[in-house]
Amino acid sequence: MSVQKRQGEELEGDISFITTPAAVHSEFGTGEDCGVKTTNSQAIHNPPLPAEGPGNESFSNLLLGALLLGIPIFVTFSLGGGFKTTVFFLICFLLPILVTFWTVASAYSPRINDKVKLPGRPIGDYITFKKDKDRQRWSSRNKIPMKTFYEMYLDGDVDFNGDVLDVMEYRHDWASFAFTWPDFQFIFFTFARDVLFHSRKQDEEQVRPNYDRGNDHYSWFLGPRMVYTSGIFSDPTREETLEEMQDNKMAIVCEKLALKEGESLLDIGCGWGTLAKFASVNYGAHVTGVTLARNQAAWGNDALRRAGIPDTQSNILCMDYRDIPARKFHKISQLEMGEHVGIRKLTTFFRQCYDMLEDDGAMYVQLSGLRKAWQYEDFIWGLYLNKYIFPGADASTPLAFYISCLESAGWEIKSIDTVGVHYSGTLWRWYRNWLGNADTIKAKYGQRWYRMWELFLAWSTIASRQGSAACFQMVVVKNLNATHRVNGFASQFGLSGALAASRAAGKATFPK
Image (cartoon, rainbow, N blue to C red):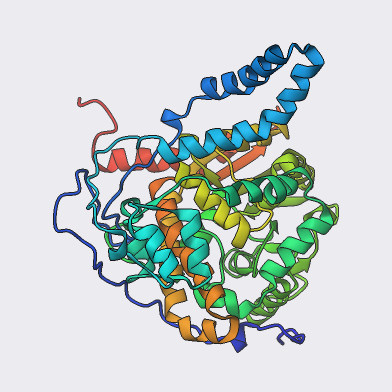
């Protein structure tokens, strides 16, 4: 018997899903060699112009530090002041120097390399300005700052001349990634506040409106599986469906955890409960899913009952992760939930998980991350996501920070896989689903909302593929002397898989 639907909730039986539309062909190809090798995989949207932008290689922390110290000291010396005056000017000049330095560096730094040859087309070949003043302002300029452009696009003041993903692939030819004053306003007055606090009230105010906007909204790009995390393709030579990719991912999660029938699994940040359903049906696990979104909990419990899973076996709870009832689980999973916990609280969260896991258990952690060898585009893209798509999700960092937090909380890293390119393939399919539901979305939520997510899905398809955004699959165990590490070998597939491939090729031993 299905769960009673509350007013305003769409459940699985209320949604009509479309088949993911076919990909569109590029209208901007030059037919010439772009200067570097490109790919031709059926699993992803292949880059026609994988150009590098300016980034960390030309950024000088030494010069920035010299300016932050040198200018206040010089002014103090000129005025005949002392130590207190120096401290005063250090505080006064801190933000102006930072803003000026980052603005200039992001606007005038050279590309990491110029191996990729840009077409050099006029900006009007790619985008069309609606207002004469904008046309006059930008037509004589080579490139428009991406921040300026996307705000105009959301406001309806400029259009793409074709498919959004197609035009964004050529963004280095018509846009720059220079920081603008609105970027700094958001960083100082919104993003910084989110990083510092992450209170229960703040998390609820940010997460619930986001994920409770409507299950129909998410169904229009997630498709029937309703999984809002990266899928995994198994064959780069063919285009697997979104549903196949998500099934692949859930199977991988369960196998990496060595999940067994009858074991208890806690899935923190479970979304619409699809992994809970998969593990319950296919592995006979007893799953407790936790989400802060009421609509997700209602959907997940309804889906479990539809699948014939009784509430005595598996359930989805609607609560803050800090309120999860104290008990022990055999296995724990958390797929891209840690980003919402926040940088400052991540170690504490991992320790909470430690205390809820049996000593011989394992935890699967999937987190989106950023590359340490950054480019300015990475920040502009990240700020867009934080402002419009994932408010308050500030814990996307390079891998080293995640490892440090896990180890500080008492965990030992058992395995790590990087799956950013798989995320790109997932996003490419989400993007096409969104386009396929365009009329329905605009009718309910309006053009601005449609464009906001259209650009997010298109740009993120590129960001995940090129390394701006990473995604890490980690399996961890308690770092105890009594942890029987030998029992975990069977699920260390990076070892067993590589050895099996070598043996299959007859290359695993020296010739006799």
